[in-house]
Length: 339
Ligand code: DAH
Image 1 (spheres, helix red, strand yellow):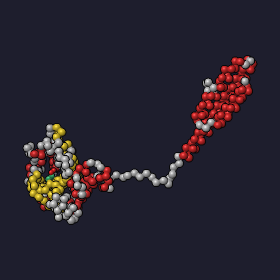
Image 2 (image 1 turned 90 degrees about the vertical axis):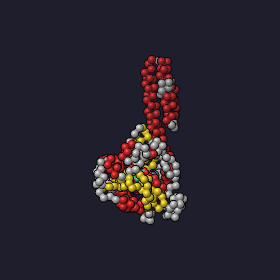
Image 3 (image 1 turned 180 degrees about the vertical axis):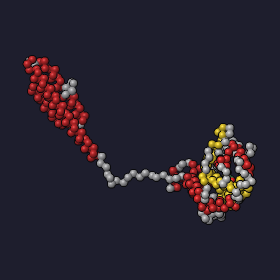
């Protein structure tokens, strides 16, 4: 039996030395030293030996087991080291390879225009004011001298969320909020989103306006005209003229619409300006004394001007964008052009 045992130990040593993977090693482990292993079967045969030989044989088997366990553990370390090294070799990092390019984004044309407009008016001494997109009728209509039967209040233009809760249709609401809380001198602009139930190539249900309000003693229509002229030239270029056309707004008197000379044809007439040579930019006027009275500002002492410009229109004119809907479709091919 001893000879048999020696043979098995030899073949085990041989097998373990040749095991090439951890998986092979696991199998050898259970074959030689596990519960149902060959060595254990020797232990069971111990009863067939003469009593005197049993202890010595038992010891021999146990020693053999320990020896094999040690060999297995050593081989395991060797195999793991080999695997680690071959992994290192196969996963070589080539530091000379060019990196993967990550594309940088760009600002949306409206964001660019928004920031540009803020920069211009801040440099002209204006503060930037803000108001909520969700408004009530007082701030959007009543305080702006817009009577209850005015067509703009109609559901077909204004998005009502509930009775007396609506999405503001104009940033003129911020005029009201500023005058409610401040006495003149006031000199603010307020850029922001507005909402109306309209949707075509030159109207979007969500759009952007910048409102301006200047109130002080002795503010005149000439100041308004001058300020808009300065703005237009800073925004579109020194050669771009502007003009006022008489108009009506409930909250200004007198009121005007502001046009600039066509940025494409410079007044000759083209498809952008539909042959007129002029492009419409927004509305303006002298604050109606009724508005002052409603908001607790002394209309005998103060005068003021206000204007509201479409920022999407400014972006369309500045970047020659033919359809307003392009601004809100988030098509990467379109947006990429503004890098
Ligand atoms: N809020 C007006 C609109 O959405 C634009 C406007 C006109 C604003 C005249 C003004 C103004 O401040 O004085 O059509």
